[in-house]
Length: 228
Image 1 (spheres, rainbow, N blue to C red):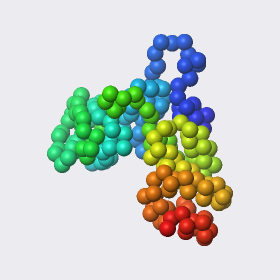
Image 2 (spheres, rainbow, N blue to C red):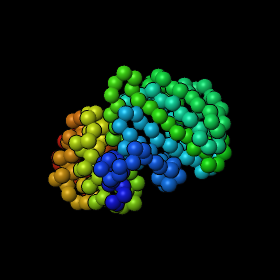
Image 3 (tube, rainbow, N blue to C red):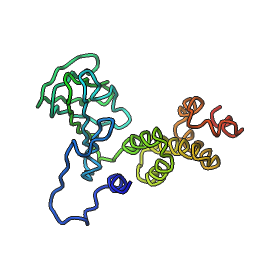
């Protein structure tokens, strides 16, 4: 976990006197195709990540909008080719193709047209300082929870609680921390963080009712009070 913890905390400038930083999309790629370039390089002024699809027809950019972040996003196809769909309109881009989606509310996504397609995404909110989003942590946490590495997931979430300013990000971090603690048998902590999550984002109560990660605490009367 040492390499991951260094990445999640950002680049340690004291570790190198070089006036530049380097990374390889392929070398930092996660099992789900995500290459967390912003974290690996310690970028603080804009978001930058890459995604790779290893089979034609795979989603290389999942459908989403940027309403929570307010970001405008620019996508660059660095390998292969992809079909982007923005608000229902399709655009085919080959290697070197670029597409900008300035409206955060616009639904967008992309499907690889050939194996090995890689898309680089760059984003930030116009006119405002950039602030990292907690989805970067949650993306790693989901992988750890799925692998049964609950202690590692808990430790990463605890370390991230004070790192993100957005209230919605905080709520999701508390929710995922509750899941990890529930699986570890720490019902007191799990219920406390679940309460904080629902207070920050009431809609999380609905998902909590069906979330199997929370099964160990569902018999506690306090759980029913929290989820309604």
